[in-house]
Image (cartoon, one colour):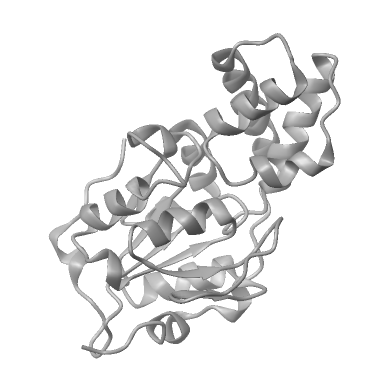
Length: 232
């Protein structure tokens, strides 16, 4: 389940309108988007189907039910959605047990946010069992709150996960900076009213109002995040 949040978590940095930083997991903090695709390719090969590489941008970043459902329909594979979901989670968990590379700049950013006591949440479309395994490497103590895709009524691209995280931290979504790597995650954060920093992992993302695009987390630090929103 999601962690409890201490009352002190709503404290903000003096002179800043930034109230919290909400971060996606796969492809944003950990270099795992390719893991998911590799697992999908392997499972469907076992079912006698080859996946078209062009489908990769369709399934990246979304809820597992959507991605798995799309692949079943696209290939005509004879497997139930629930069974495929179990296989995908098992395969992914096996891969992250063997290796879990962090994205460049991820560890430094998390350390900086913790050092300055910035309220921080991990917001992922992955299931709780996967998040808990990843947290063993990321450090559960780096986050005041974690939100899994199977713990909200509707996951990304709906706003629910980010609204849930903001409410849990006791902050205004409009004063939150979200760091995401996919169009699905960006859509979720923007629907929740958050400022977004997009670090594209698989498919390009274009900048727009309240959305800043950077090539790497190495360009993201606390002054950068504070500068996304004016003082008030």
